[in-house]
Amino acid sequence: MRRIAVLLVAMLLAGCDGYLSVQGRALDPAGKPIAGASVSLMTYGHSRCILKNDCTTDATGRYEVGLVGEPIAKVAHTLIVSKDGFKTHCESLQLQAGKPPVKDITLERYNAP
Image 1 (cartoon, rainbow, N blue to C red):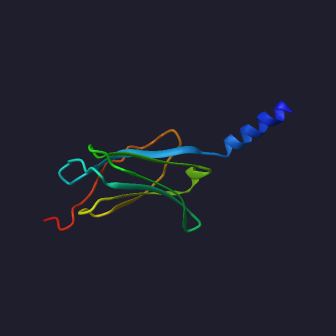
Image 2 (cartoon, rainbow, N blue to C red; image 1 turned 90 degrees about the vertical axis):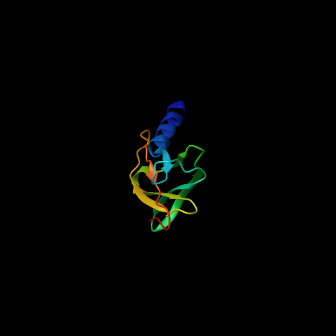
Image 3 (cartoon, rainbow, N blue to C red; image 1 turned 60 degrees about the vertical axis):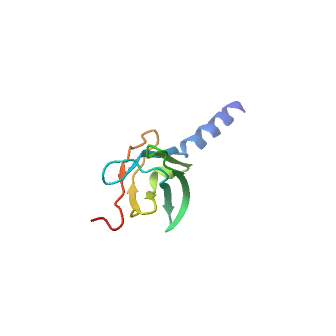
């Protein structure tokens, strides 16, 4: 009985990709941090959003946002960073469990000279 339980747990873990994340900073064109920017990480499957998580940048512009699910490493991920007065940044990402990329994002200002 114990061998069956161990086998079932191993099968469940093998099908789950675990935690995927991305971290970095939101910066203005001068390289200054943007505090309070909204950051979203979304996963799409079959033309619809299946997982989504949000966070807000801190005073130094830093963020970390991640997703937990199965099998999330095999589908498209989209990173969206936005803040009033700036153009929204949208980027497609390939993420791997245990290897969070660092993505520093420079937001363009609206009505930039």
